[in-house]
Every structure is written in C-alpha cells, then in structure tokens.
Image (cartoon, rainbow, N blue to C red; front, side, top):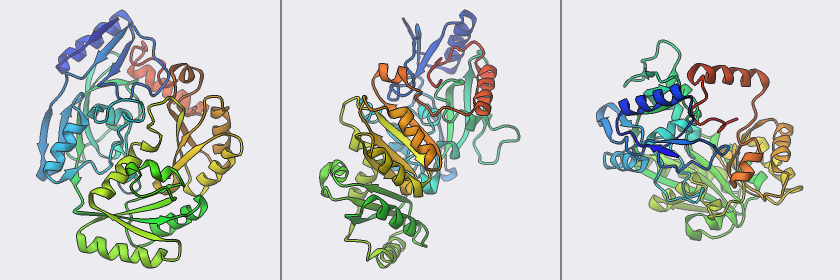
Length: 401
C-alpha cells in the first residue's frame, strides 16, 4: 500500500493524473477524523492531504478566509477567535464520536461532509458559507469554482456540489469561506423535566417568538448527565440559546421566561458554561463513549421526530437526543437490532427524512446502506455526476454507495 503525501496543489494533480492513467483507486483523507463514516474502502493507495496546509488569505474586514485543504479546522477557528470572528455554521467535530482525538478535522473535510452544528437553524451548513474552491477531478483535471466574494457565480455552482460528496467527485486543494463576527454574549435558557412531546412544543413556541433563538435542543433524562461533564444534573433539559449584544440578550431571555414560565423549572446558563453545552451537543458527546455501538443521525420534520423515536423504542433498545428544534435526532442502537430497515421504515411512516449511519464497526458498515438510499431518479443523476467527474471510479470508490 502506497501513501502519497503531497504538499502542493501541483503534486495533488500529478498524483491523481497517475492514478487515473493506471486506473488505480485512491482513498483520500486529511487527518482521517471522519474515516469511519461510509462504507469501508478497499484501495491499494491513499492520498493524504495532511501536509497541504496553511491559510492563504484572511481579511477580517472583508469577512473572508482561504486555506489549503489539509489545514486543521482547530487552527483556523483559533485564528478566527483571536479576531472576534467564527464560522457561523458551527462545524461539528466527529473525532470524539468515532474514537479519535478532538480537533483533527481539516477545512476541506468541513465542505466534503457539509458540516454544521446546533446553529444550523439560523446559519445553515458549510455549503451556505462556501465562496470558492480549487480542486482536481477524478479525470486528473484541475478546476476552480467561485471566488472570494458572495456574488461570483454565473454558471453551476460547483463549490456547493462538493458539499456532502465525501471526496467521491474531486479532491479539494484550496477552499474559501465566508466568516462572520462572533456573538458578544451567549446565554442558554434550560427548561427542566420535560418529556419529548412537551419539549418539542416548547421549542416550537420559542422558535416562533421574537426572541431570535439561535439553537434549540432537548436532552432526555439521563442523556443530560452526559453533557458538560454532568455539571447540570441528569434531569431532562430543553435548551434554548440566545446570542448577540448583551442588553439584547437580556431582553430576549426575559421574553422567553415570560413565554415559557409555565412549562417547567427554568435555569439560565451563561458564558463558557453555555458554550460547553452546545459544543458537546454539536459533537454528539453523549454517545462518544469510545465504543462501536451504532450511532445514527436522522433528519426529519421536528413535529414528527419524537413520534418516530417513541415507535422505534417499542421495537429496539434506543438512546436518543434532539437538536435543531427536534429536526435532528441522534440515535444510539444495538448491532443486533434490525436497525436500518426498521429505522428507515419508521422515518417514512412519520413524514419522511434521512438517516445516516455515522458510527459502527467496519463489518456492520459493509453490510448496510450507510447513507440514505436515493430514489431512482436521484440515483441516476448521482451516477451521471460521478461519471462526469470521476469516470474511472478512482476517488473513494464505494464509500457512499
């Protein structure tokens, strides 16, 4: 097995041109923090981008940052924090969930897996903040898309096409993102003791108010103890995050207190304690136990997700918690449960959605459709895109399908 470690875009290009000519498949990765997601690969060669690093452009006043593909996300976030800025979409760190170290993800992996976090309700995901890319297709052809300003696309936006492609269409060599100022103040209002259905109703009421809630999550009983080191107890916690200028946050938290005062006991969590809670929710820390028990990421209508979970619990041993007002459900199941067919069948029954297996043993991932199976018309379109960008199937072959 050969591992290629290019340090320049030209070396990436020549490596892929060689692989295309030899029709020799490549596994592409940065630091491998998300290597355990998707079907296991069987490739003879690896393209390791961990040496393709460095911030190539950062203009705080223009809210734009460019970096080479292998640049660690943690380094970029530290640079942004020093200038009072952030990636507003709050990219998740899969490392702890998959048994790895935190802070190992790369900036190209952010786009390739279309990362987001609890602020997705307000800020969207990586694809909503990408401005431009440089990449090499599976044909061995270098190309660029977008630029360094927001309105720069006249044709098809290939930058967004790379989002959630998991390295199967092209290898990114440089990316440019929009950045935004970080909030001055952050306060989380916690409602304690609610059951799932009452929590979903409370989150919907808060999101529909004028309080401008940026994140809403629900941690059922016992799950709450696995967040922030258990400092906030094990009682169920329905969490509402409010961010902005200090006086505005105080006013909006008080408005939420008046709106939700009868829902249950209320608790305010501010500053670094609030950030720790949302960081743990973002990174699925309640299920980051170092094991390989299957963990699923389910996206569906917030009003229906708790019904689906209740039906699932009648047939399988399940732990669950909710983000995105209930629209994102993290599920931990047992390997011996008939999980994929059962779970996806219930999702269809309760209005539809998507389920992705984000953690499991390699044999388990090989036996199941890890990503949501596409309907025939979308599968045909995906196959055509793959044929255009990577006709010889050399980039992460079989990872997604």
